[in-house]
Image (cartoon, rainbow, N blue to C red; front, top):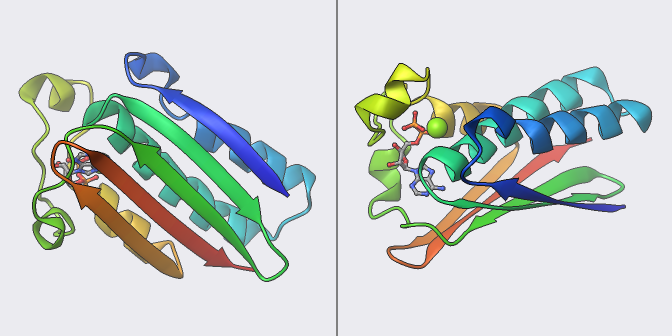
Length: 136
Ligand SMILES: Nc1ncnc2c1ncn2[C@@H]1O[C@H](COP(=O)(O)OP(=O)(O)O)[C@@H](O)[C@H]1O
Ligand SMILES: [Mg+2]
């Protein structure tokens, strides 16, 4: 089963909508609560990143028999050094974004912790794709 969502980069207030909808859908499908918890955290963090660091993007979910695959794609500025970006506490968020409560630099480490597979593909000036898998 496949699901598709658009994430608006202008709308801070709406950030978290896609991950919230995915959570609801997985509950309806009777997916195990620990799987739902991991996916909700991982997708929320990646969704917020698309809003605060890029100009929004798309979320595609593929519910397979043995795992749930999620791809978050944006055409934002890209990540020049992914190893650095993965470090706990590393953030390029502006003071303005921090004042809104984002930019603690824990998003990517949290995605790593809450997924069974994580792949970040990024090119500066082109965009970023975050692929997440959680096993069922
Ligand atoms: N989709 C993205 N596009 C561009 N840069 C990103 C994206 N996601 C993450 N980054 C970069 O990786 C850094 C670390 O991300 P994260 O751990 O979520 O921390 P935070 O979002 O709090 O800054 C960000 O500060 C940013 O520089
Ligand atoms: Mg983040």
